[in-house]
Image 1 (cartoon, each protein chain N blue to C red):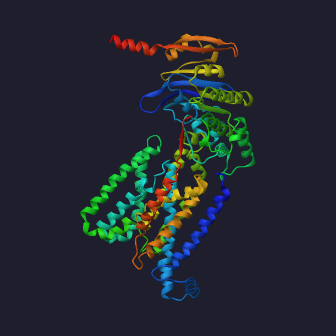
Image 2: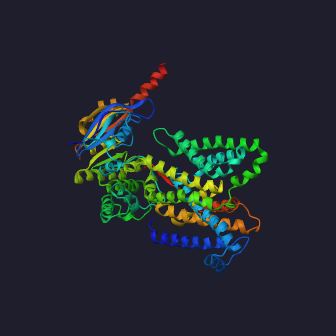
Amino acid sequence: MKHHKNNLWILLSLFILCIVFFMLSIMMGAVDITFTEALEAFLKGENTPHLRILLHIRLPRTLVAMLVGSALALAGAILQGVMRNPLATPNIIGVSSGAGLSALTIMILFPSFFYLVPIGAFVGALLTTAMIYTLAWKRGIVPTRLILAGVAVNTVLGAGNNILLSTYPQRVGGVIHFLVGGLSGVGWKDVRMITPYILVSLFITLFFSQKMNILMLGDELATGLGLQVERVRRTLIVLSSLLAGSAVSAVGLLGFVGLIVPHMARLFVGNDHRWLFPTSIFLGSLTLMACDLIARMIFAPVEVPVGVIMSILGGPFFLFILRRQYRGHGHDRS
Amino acid sequence: MIVLEGRNLTLSYTTRPVIERASLAVRQGEILSLIGPNGSGKSTLLKALCRLMKPESGEVRLFGEDIWKIPTKEVAGKVAIVPQVKHVPAEVTVRDLVGFGRFPHMKFAHSMSREDEMRVEEAIATTKLEKQADRLVATLSGGERQRAWIAMALAQTPQILILDEPTTFLDISHQLEIMETICKLNRESHMTIIMVLHDINQAVRFSDTICAIKSGEIVAVEKAKELMTKERIQALFGVEGAVFEDPEHACPFFIPHRSIDKISKMTNRRQL
C-alpha cells in the first residue's frame, strides 16, 4: 500500500487510455470517420449519414461498452474480496443463470414480449442473488456456504435453461446472441436503462473500499474493529448484483470480464481496495472498448461477438497472470 | 469496578450448548485467564464476552450496558480483540495493519489524522516492531506477526484487551516476549486483559485471576496462585503431577507426570 504515487499515475494513464479508446471506438468501424469529419458533423449538426452512424450507433454502443465493462469488472473485484476467493465472478451469485433463465423464458416462450428481455434479465439476476443469499444464511453468511449455495442454484437454473433450449431447438437461433454476449444492436434505450443503476452502484462501492480492506482480515478481526460484517457483506453483494445484473441485461452473458479484469488490476495496483476498485472500473471500461473494437474490425464488415474475443484473448492472459506466481491471501493461525 | 460481565450465558453452535448458564465478572485492571481442556468451551466463552458470538440466552454487559445494544464501532473503541484465526492480507505492511486499528475512531472519509498516526507509531513502539514497520506482514516470523496483531489491537486504544491463545504455536522465548508485553500493558496502562491460555504455568504466573472451565461449566474463578494444587489440576485436566514453587517469582508451577483419564479409559476398555 506504499506506492500511492505510482498508483495515481497508473490510474491517470488508464483514464487517458479510456478517452483515447473512446475516440477510436466512435471513429473506427465498417465506415471510418476521421476526427475532423466527426467534429464537423457535430458542429454543423447536419443530418449526414456519418452523423447518424455516430449518434445512433457508435456513441451509444461505446457508452454501453464502457458502462458494462466497468460494472462487470467492479462486480468481480467486489465478489473476489467478499468471498475471499480469486475465482469468484458474478456468476457465483447467480447473475448469469438468473438473468439467462428469465431472458430465455421471455425469448422462447413469450417472443411477443421480446422488449421485456433486458428488464427481465435484470430482475432475474437480482432475484437469483437474493435466493442464493437466503439459502446460504444460517446465523450469518460464510463465504464457502455462499459459494456452495451458488453452485447448487446455478446448476438447477442451468438445467432450466437447457430444458428450454432443447425443447425449442428451432428458436435457439435468436437466443444465441444473448448467450454469447455482444454489443451489436445496443442503442440509447440500453444506455438509458443501465446508466442510473451502474453509476449509483459504482459511486456507493467506492465508499466501501476501506471497509472491504477491513473485511479481508477475517470476520472476527473485522468485528473486533467495529465493522458490521454481515451488513457490509450484504450491501456489497447487492451492489455487485446490481452492477452485473445491469450489465447482463444490456449485453447478455458476458462473464469473463468480471473474472479477469480485477486480476489485471491487482497486477497494477495490488490488493488495497481503495486502489483496486477505481482501477478495476477504468480497466474494465478500457478492456471492453478495446475488445469491441477488435470484434468489429478483425473480420469487417462481419462482426464477431465481443464475448468471443474476450474469451480468446482473456484465457491466455489469465494463464499468464497465474504463471506470474500470483500471491493469494494467506492464512494465519499463529 | 466490574468492566465486563457475562450473566447466565448459554452458548451453542448447534442445538447442544457448549456453555450452559455461565456467569463471569471481570474487574478493571486485572489479568484474567481462561483455562481448561480442549473443547471445554473457553474460547466460546471468550467470543461471547467480546460480541463475536451471540448468546442463546443470558447477557453480556460492558461497563454496565448490554454489549449488543452498543454500536459495534463504539465497542471497538473500548474492547480490542486478537482472535486465534486471522487472515493475512497480501501486500499489507506492518504499519498498514496497525493502521487498521484506528478504524473504529475514524470518521466517514477513513483518512488518518495526525492523532491516528501518532497512535499507530506508539503501538509499533510498544510492541518493539519499529524495525519491521515497513515490512510485509506475510514475511514476518510467527512471533513478530503475533506482535503485529497485538499492535493493531493497541492502536484501537482499548480499555480491555482480549486475546485467544496468544502464545500457541510460538517458541518459548517468543511466548515469554508476548506475555511480558501483555503484562507491561496491564501494569503501565492499566489495561484489563482477558485471555485464553493453554499453558497453566504461564496462566498462573502472569494472571491475577484464573477462570477454570470444564465441559462447558465454570468450575472455579480464583486468585491464580490458590488454584494451583495438584488435586485441582488433576480434576480439571485429568493429569497427575506435582506442584513446586519457583523462588524467582514466588510462583507455583506444575510438572505433569502422567495422564490418568486416558489410562483409566484404556484399562476400562481392556476389562470390557
